[in-house]
Image (cartoon, rainbow, N blue to C red; front, side):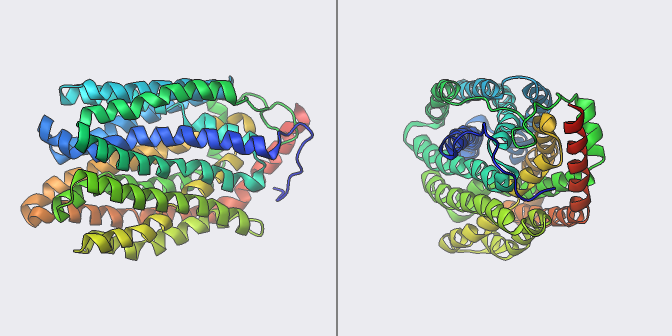
Length: 437
């Protein structure tokens, strides 16, 4: 696999490529504002609807993740065959509309259905966007570009927590859903008008790649074991991020006496800014170091996960809210290193005609374990630990999740052992594909 690709003659200007990247990052920001708004609102929702921690975990985790990942693969299959920009725009309108609907619910069941609608819409966001970005940016810049895009997660967390907490305290949790959800519908129209669908495979020879079936994509990935190790590494890294992140507002409110507005502002600034820095830095470092050895794309996540353990542990065991938030800042920077490099490598392990589906499969594994099980397991452990640890039940449930997350480091290490030969195999397959089209 070559380290440097010269720009083809039809490549868009650098400024337009970055314009598209910024637009898609704003879409991803809406994605996580609409996803995380429920997290900051879960304490008043819990009181009004009389819910348990396990029900909260199911609501913010498994019920959302199930429809998100199941719908993601067929939508990605369609994206590998049709206009990806339009799919992203329609998906944004759907999940934004369903976020607003969440403010109308009167029961737990209705709220679950509304969040399923949000998950259905969000399923069409990232896989097509990853494919679009990979056709706007050459391979040696994809780690940085995809990390920039992924920073939308934490910009969304920042606005979702800060704005959601303030709106909920000032106007009630129902109005928070309305105010957060409706602007995304307008931005969907702007996206459809302003962003152009790129040529597929622009950086892989300039020929339109064949449209692979789901079976062909799975067959190709079967011969790329590093893809599956990376997916599992992402899954258990995000297990900590979703499991503990979704309950951290409740932890600060219950164990440290902070108000919902205080928690929203503090966590929005700390988690949002730190996560955005860490996500971008992970991709930037991987691109810089990966020129000499592609294994840096999985070594960087390993280093981030390991170095984050000390500040993350203090954030869960400390007694002073101020120092807890100080420790949370480097912890969130370091444990955000993994996503951009992982997406970049997974895009490089398949042909251009398989990229949206490959991203959907990556997100299937990541979200079923991380988003689907993380909050549910933390919620179940919190309920189970209550007779043992009393008011510290949630704290120790989150510490347990932190230990489980170490499996992600093991899986990234296993990926490093197979990555180079798998990339070489894909390079040979791309050469053969180009010669036969």
